[in-house]
Amino acid sequence: MTADGLRAAVDALRLVDHHVHGAMVGDVEGAAFEAGFSESPWPPPVGTTHLDSQLGFAVRRWCAPVLDLHPNVDVTAYVARRRDLGAPEVTRRLLAASGVGLFLVDTGCRAEQTLGPEEMAATSGAAASEIVRLESVAEEVTASGVDATRFADRFASTLDERARYAAALKSVIAYRHGLDFDPEPPSAAEVRRAAGQWLRRQETGEPRLTDPVLLRHLLWAGLERGLPLQFHVGYGDPDLTLHRCDPSLMTDFLRLVQDRHVPVMLLHGYPYHRTAGYLAHVFPHVYFDVGLAVNYTGARSRAVVAESLEVAPFGKVLFSSDAWGPAELHYLGAVLWRRAMASVLGEWVEAGEWSSADAVRVVKMVGAGNAKRVYRLEESP
Image (tube, rainbow, N blue to C red; front, side):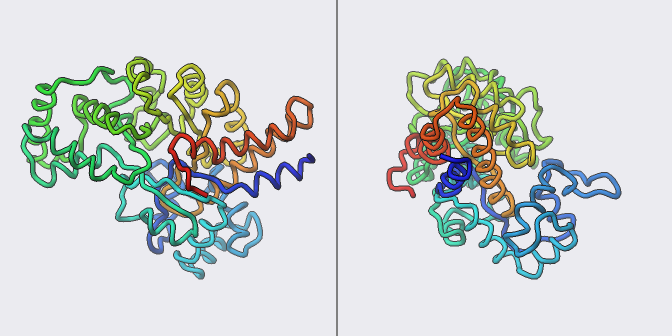
């Protein structure tokens, strides 16, 4: 198979984006639009924009042609064309052009600003399923009115209802505490005491769940459902402390839950993606991706994808975009991953290290097959 043949096989694959957020609802311009391309909540240096980055350059290179513009068009022309088309048409074009056949959508992050799973499916022409965020369910439970003695039972019943048709559960304990949490499940008495303290804080206007005891309780309650359990690890906005998001800090927890046979999914990982790959190598229930990093590294994403294929078995690596907000991120996650896989694997085929048949097989595993197996998506595209 030629390099062009391998690229054609990669481009033809209908991907399963196993961790993504909804595309942005409505038209957004100026600084609000540019903010969607940065993990920083603060404005860029004077005289620059958030699009002066690997991600911003990738938007102008790869998204511009989808909007009928020349590659690498300047920012002003790009934003003007986006405005002329309108957000619904831009989103439709970019989602459809991604070639994703199934989106697994985390609905726990500012859901009111983004498309839900059904809307993502209708807009893209693909299928979509929900990923339920544990912390969001807990916050909904307390907002509806519950006392400390009934919190655990109410959370369990609510999670049962929310997870009935979900593809997976997700935890953001990395943001709320860090991955250096006590791996043991808390006792019922500890949960009641912590719930009481949290409820009292809510009376003073602190609804966000950060208590480490309750965060651990959510994890162990989630494990009871048997669904794949996703964890944010590594890179993110400044709400987290990066060194506490190293997935190696979860090693004792991974050992404790191994016998439950629940898949643990380590998301994005950068700059700890090699560590995540190691954990996927040594533990039978651990899987990982480099989703968020592919977008933010832009022209350097080839290196990140290559590093994700170093030590982990290929049946443990999955594709994701981790896109949130502007639909450019959903499209770029797919385009940059396809280009990186075709380039990296093509180089190995050309050097005689791999056969072309093996290269195509691995692309299909990582791009869709592994997710279909782990999430039991027998009927997915």
